[in-house]
Length: 548
Image (cartoon, rainbow, N blue to C red; front, side):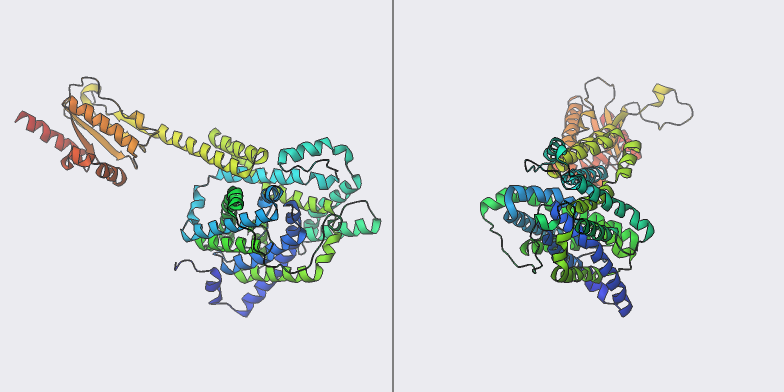
């Protein structure tokens, strides 16, 4: 457990007043950025505006204080929006709280079991595919508010929302669309003129003022939600067996996505500041933060790449910056939250459009499609489509299964079992081939020998006229029981034909498989040679023994 130490403890050992003021500045700026995003993402998740702030405050504070990254900023993120909305629609807030707490426990367990490095086993094509897919689901989910549509039904699934939007597009409120376009214009143009103040905050102020002063018929947050500036209260959800069974798949989805998103964000942050995070401690912190967020009325949280990058760019270099960001949001909740009622819904939609665009990584998708093998492109496209049409769980499970199958096929393709060419057969006069006695045949085995390549191990059916077979395995890094059974079958066939078998240069892992199976003793230790020269010498001994 000694390596499960929060980065805050390490950072405070040499902390100075200069460091504090730098973190204070960064924390305040990140809080200003997080304010409209937290509200927007809460609404996109189907919960009330203040619950987004609860999440950024509770989870943001705990994840910064306990995390394994110096600069990670946590809070509600776009990746969870459609997932949370679906859970709330199916199981209500009680179900969401139960799923988030269970996910938090899973994340803590993952960290304690040192599973932080497991992120490397998620293929790049899958993370790219589902991230782009989530971006599309967010965009589709905001079409209603951007255009002020009047839905006749309350769709939950992404494709249902798209179908309902197309069917009711004749109800579009063009004043709402105009406010949305104004917000988009501010979001795009403001950073080109002035970067110190976040464009999303300016968009909120400008559009709220326009709707209020011009008395535009546009829905605001206050028209649809009751705004509360109350502090988050501890609430224990009902955790019955039926509830747990119902939300367990959702909890697994939240845990996996939180782990992937937070560790990817931490890796990006490491590259920006030249440091290295503790992935296992980060998972524990994510677990604690998510469980606490749910207990205080929040939604799932994870490391946010954009907010983390903003923290770094504004001078944040320790977890104190993330803690300051949470405290500032707490003050906003208490003092300024009622003003959130004035924010137009099309402005929220526009902010989420920009979030979706930024997280889509469309340039990365195009690059992968252009320059990657067709099999990798297939994994990316399948993951993307399944994320949009179904959900993230189906996308990850199918994507991983497809990636594993393709990987096994590639490994099977590179596995080769080939008999040597002999001097007497080729007439080699240049000494390019190693001399092999006429009574010996040598097979070279290359590549990993597993169930996908086991059928490449030949049968000894023909009368070769040779009485010793050398199997050279120096290029076999690993072997499984299926390949071992095929080798055992070949050994039995050779024994029936009076052919002795010698194994040459067996690497550590395949050798352990031989030993555990008992085949090592069956073949005999003397018939496992360290190299081809020793194997040929052993073959000569066997021939001499037969003559004697």
